[in-house]
Length: 342
Ligand code: TLP
Image (tube, rainbow, N blue to C red; front, side, top):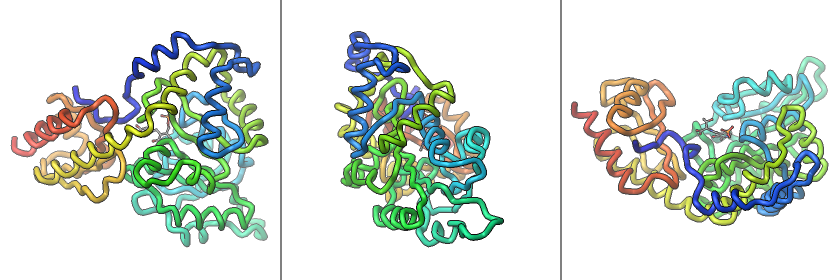
């Protein structure tokens, strides 16, 4: 099987397995796990923040952030297809009692003027309080799009002027950083908190980090506990996260090159794919020419040895990662092209 469903499917590397086997551990709820502490310090330093918190998943990191920044009844401005709104099982409503103000974006990128219009007037008693603006970088349903840094800067300045917090869902912040040449701590400087994943393109088996100020992380630690996310000898998995941050970032460029390769070869084969829109490790491909819906195409591709996800009625998502080579990408294109002809 050539697995292009997600970068979440990546296996831990041998270096990670070795680090896990020998990790020094303790009870992290007592803050006694030296490996977790090391990972949290490393992650915070790399993002230019004071403190970090190791969480089970990206979803937990985003939702702990929302719970910590917002009060019940508050409103969160978020792009209409953002992960926090679209893919987290209604968690912001269910767990934090907040509502999403959805701003439609282009490939997940919100126009600063649209965000400005969505901010509530604090003087009007009918309105909820706008507590937070969420920015997803890179944007998943936007096809791995990287935000223009000027937009992030503008939204951040607008938010700060009004006492609104900015949270960055940076599940793939290092993909954004490698693609743009803008360091992760520069992206992070425009946000009050950032969540980023160790378990996607960086290949760690489990875990994400939430970073921000010391005060924020102290409160977030309590909310993580509230959600059942207080782990014990978590250094076993944190050890892999350290290897991920220390050794797996630069190679993301290979994944980006493979995603471009997929898009250009699929376009040449007659699919609706656009190389110019491939900025990182994802290619969104319109499979209408096959005469199948995206769900049918996905099922047919699986039978032929290629795994992908359908993201709309017409589009599939292909995600490149450490465990697929350029040769396998060529092979996958051949298999998918054969589905156009048959
Ligand atoms: N994304 C997954 C699925 O949940 C869709 C994927 O396969 O891409 N933020 C962003 C931008 C994400 O893409 C994801 C995962 C998360 C948060 C959540 O991370 P996890 O899966 O660790 O909860």
